[in-house]
Length: 128
Image (cartoon, rainbow, N blue to C red; front, side, top):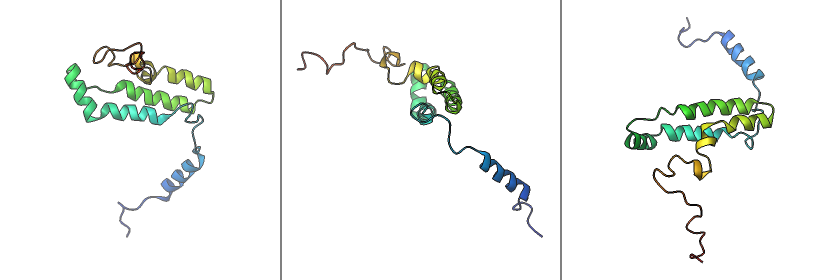
């Protein structure tokens, strides 16, 4: 007798095999258009202990990271979109693009922790 715990019916294996055969090998949009890693990085940063400690200290509560999780879902949707312009529009609606990213003027810490300058300190005439 075979142990029923370790025995898997062949029908499940066949179903898995068919699923692998029909799954596309890559997403529609390239990483230049939609980079999923950016959104996973932001989510893992948010759920990390350091960020949660800072959130508790600054705001008195833990961050649920809902915005970052929604960004991941939007990024997957954009990644699977066939039109690159539509994918860019979807990415532009994310919390990351609207509040973080490389634009320091929308940083959540600008004004709260540090003052945003029009010109950086190293880009003054006095420094030359």
